[in-house]
Length: 316
Image (cartoon, rainbow, N blue to C red):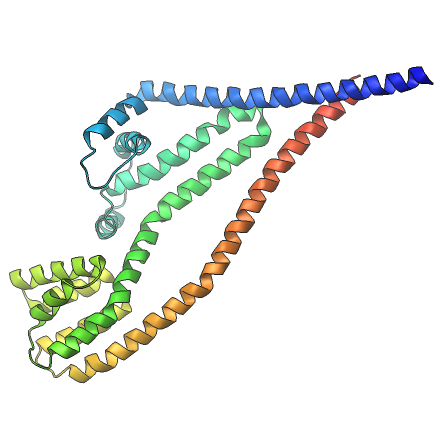
């Protein structure tokens, strides 16, 4: 009986040791895959003659005085993107649209570089899936999914920036309508309305108004206002431009801007309410995403441990 008990204890200890050994093996596999992935990236750098991170860091030190700071990793990725951009071709119509959108979003990249940037960031993530596919296949889909998510996120970055910029401009438009109404009581100078308000408003709207003022000085007033409407692409800005065009053509637009101020203020208030309602939903979605990630990691560990234990039991 005692021998049976000792045999049982010995068997449990053997299983426990085997589980520990398997856990160590899993850890070593992950480390090996990470090192192998880094090696693949370094080999690619040599083949395509792309500067190393150390070189990018040196460049970063030289560019410290730049107003917009970039990390060494971002500079390195930019170098890769510039080389890849040379082989990317974009339809001429789409390219012109992208050029205008990138300029509006204040992104200092060509359309080809913008596309290449998304591909490079996703590609670097996907490289890690190669060694894991042979050594630890369970984690391979994680890197592939992450690569797809990164590519989608980088591709949508432009539209998100444009949307955020347009929202900031729209937030300041009730003030512009109100300023126009007050100015029209003693002056019909549209250039004065635009220049005076550009000095006391949000940066995004101020930039657009300064461009419009420069257009007015160098060309026709109507053309400048029409261009402003086209650049911003907002129904609220269209209402403002319609009123300004009326002033330019000699119409009395004081009542128009008075009612427009109330209308735009109501629209802004409703948008703020919608934004406040969406905030809890975003937090909830983020919480669910984090929970799913933790569950996947937890399940991966459990599956590895169960596999190790079963292997020890049936392997003898």
